[in-house]
Image (cartoon, rainbow, N blue to C red; front, side, top):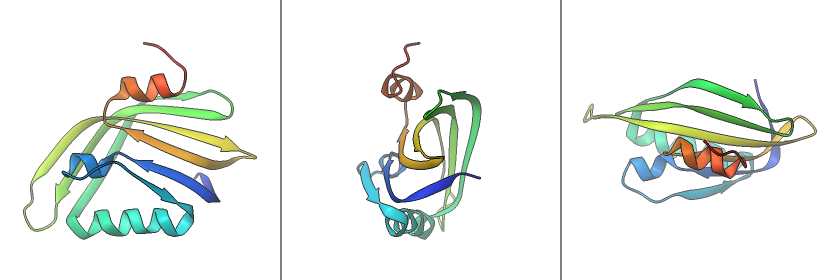
Length: 111
């Protein structure tokens, strides 16, 4: 389980997959708002990571994201990547991407 700093910044890409725009959520309340909004329209959000890289104060995860719409049952699937920056063992910034190469680049890695 990941400890999350009360002042975390969450850069969410999932709203883009749903036709919205990327957004930044601040603090625990902001992250709760994000997931409340997502579960208002989705029955399922599933992320499966196939690759994790521990870079010390940063973690990079690469995988796939699947969702299923509430009511419509419409399903989406997308490549997915995330970068989590840590300080004192707590996540202070979480960035998600629908292109894993962007996640690798954001972490300072090149593929």
